[in-house]
Length: 145
Image 1 (tube, rainbow, N blue to C red):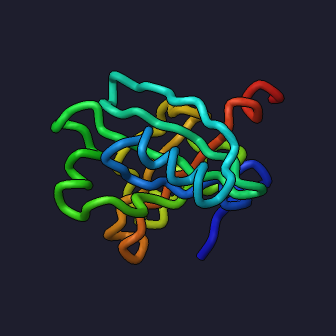
Image 2 (tube, rainbow, N blue to C red):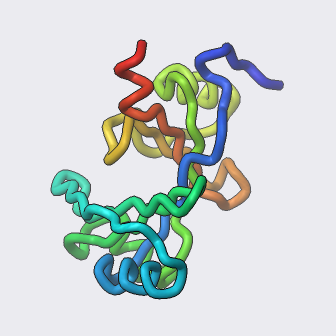
């Protein structure tokens, strides 16, 4: 069963989130190995994370580093080590899509709320075959409404 409207249809892969111990070291490796473009480092104190978005051609990669041992990213690194943390998909209206998913039995574990690049929500990996999925309504999309 699917329920969606034009503003809740899931679009392209927005980015892949990667948990890292050091953004600077990871960025340096991406620059050296893949000729990645320069990326700015952003900080979200509320969620205890630093982030950098690499725009590698049509692909976007989000590097995430914990600010402290209490952040979700720190806990992920303690359990899994560095690696893929989540996949993010673009959606026109994250709030409505999150509500639709909950009606289908998919738990939303955080959000909808503001993230680095837009309004976001995360599904429970237990409900999505072990994958943490982020839904994103980019800020530029919100401004065009």
